[in-house]
Length: 289
Image (cartoon, rainbow, N blue to C red; front, side, top):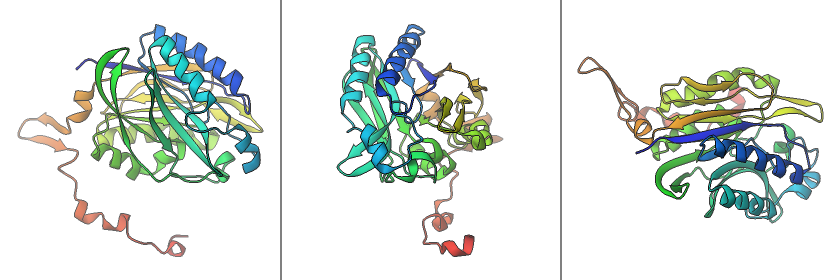
């Protein structure tokens, strides 16, 4: 099974200016595809911006999952024969979601709605999602492929259960579009590595840069391999592209043999699910405050 090159675009985003953001994304895509990337990841809310101050204001810029912005991105995917993950604001009737879409020349392959919502920016007004799926990519650049992608968004990575559920569903690569502010510096440096290591899978976090209504964004996008090591790390707050390669066979092998017969671990068989019931049991939150 051949390796699959992935790119992450650490870009600035203009709030409320989808036309400018889409033009910028298309230009970045031409660069990443020229470098051989088969999938390119953009930040959270890449088409819209993040720091909206009311539900009404945000809904003006939200679209259905297959709205005009999606059509523009799919058209570019068709032109360049590539795939994209991007963050956007999704309108579904009277509800607003912070969403991420997986798009290719063949259309919409997956749509994810952010599960865990901080009291920050547009997430103050969005509805939490209720699904945690793994999406299969069967073709890349017109050739057969076998890649399983899971989507999370920003704050989701602080809840290891989400990554673990996707690992148990067979995910090869977890993609995390994000809008990390300065207070998330430690999360950006360590959490992607932890999620990759503990689940033995590939993990890419793609943050934005720039400032928006008084909030600054720190970049620090990174690609981690299943050992938890940095493959590429844009450890700064400037626009940049990161790259990495996914070997699905490596991520699917959860039996790690360091010394045969003397030092072996298995990331799934060594679990003790019977001990984890408290994770899903009702909790009196007042006892934890």
